[in-house]
Image (cartoon, rainbow over all chains, first blue to last red; front, side, top):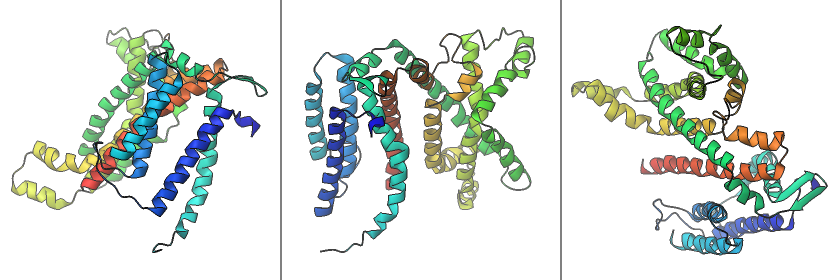
Length: 90
Length: 287
């Protein structure tokens, strides 16, 4: 695995994504969700909202890096809050 | 309460393994590279998000990105309407059908680097048909030294290579429209324009979305043809994103920066593809 040039932060990042996918699978198995319409202009499933939230988080981090000198944890905090809003009301 | 048998999910396993090795594991490696300064496999330093900050402020990326969007927009603006016109003018029955299908398929069978070489010769003002005709008409055409001519040649080359794909997709869409629609239009004495606007175009919507998505993705990732034809020049006039990325990764061996660049590139394509996918599935849901 040395050729993959792992670092602790990237390992934690991917472990987080994997844990998120496992958690979503368990959630869907235990309590199946269905498509619904929130403030997003399309009807979405939980998985759709997770994907939209992750994509928005990636762009959010890039925007903060491109336009500000803020430390990255501020971007992460904003994106986590955004993800929660999308999952709940999206 | 268990009502479903989920054993069929095991059938997805081979695809998952294949995608893991062809896409997921290489992508994880790129993410790992993007946060490090790599000199050789054993000498690498964690730099956090430094490469992302640098790349996002890099004028080379901005210029390539603008060029890339303009290029993809021009490709779609020319190839989609032209493909529809070609499909509408193709014969519906008789010997003309296989003849026109084979004729349209020919450019699609030519490899990218060969297309670049063909147009490198065709565009020459001394021995190339295209370049010679333009110069004979009094136009000062030289794709190797004039950025405008280089752009036109790269666009014409793409139109020559890929309009067939749009035309073939549209033709298949047109062929799937039942005759009863045309019979109803004849009874109503609908004009050609009305038939196109109210029967053919709505029925072509899904096919056109696929065509636009394919052509956008392909034109947004274009590398070989302009690289062979112009080498990205004159200057950097036809240097698109993939060529800038290749120069960074292989020319300068700047793997960390190139990895950050390719992830940003990937996010742009992912967003656009998701928008197209959502538009298509949303249309299907509406029936």
